[in-house]
Image (cartoon, rainbow, N blue to C red; front, side, top):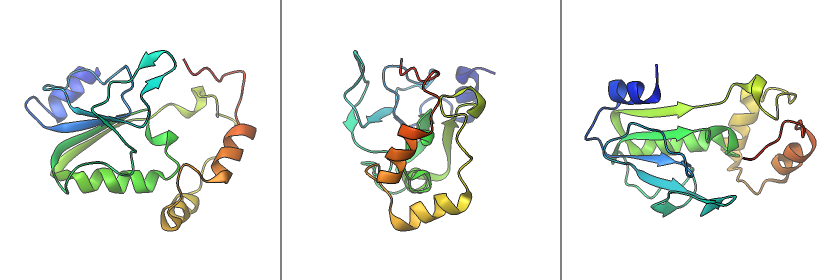
Length: 152
C-alpha cells in the first residue's frame, strides 16, 4: 500500500494538519497541503519546505487544533521521543491521526547500537532532555556505522 493510499484511507481530503520535518520530500497525498514545520531552513543544498521553523516537541498550534500530524523519519532523530509524541497528541483532535514512518533499524547507519530501553525513554521525558544533551551527542559520534552514514 502506498502513502497516497494510506493517506486517502486514514486521513482523507479536506483535513487540516501538519507535517513535521518534511524537508524537501513531503509525504505525498495530503490535500490540502499541510502546515510544514521544520527545525532547519535547508538540508544540504536543498531548501526545506517549511511554513514554520520550530521543534517537533514545541509545535505552534492550540490544543486539539489539527485533524492529523504526519512525521516521516523524524521520531528517531528527536532526543526526547516521548515528549514529541505527547506534543503531537496534544495538538491533534480526539479521534485524529498521528501518521508515523520510522526506518527499518537493520538498514540504518546506527544498526549496531543497542536498543534503547523504555526506561531510558521515560527518564529522558521526565528529565526534559533536549537535543543539547551531551550523552546523545556522544552516543551518535561513537556508536554509528560510519560506512553506512550517508546524509543524502
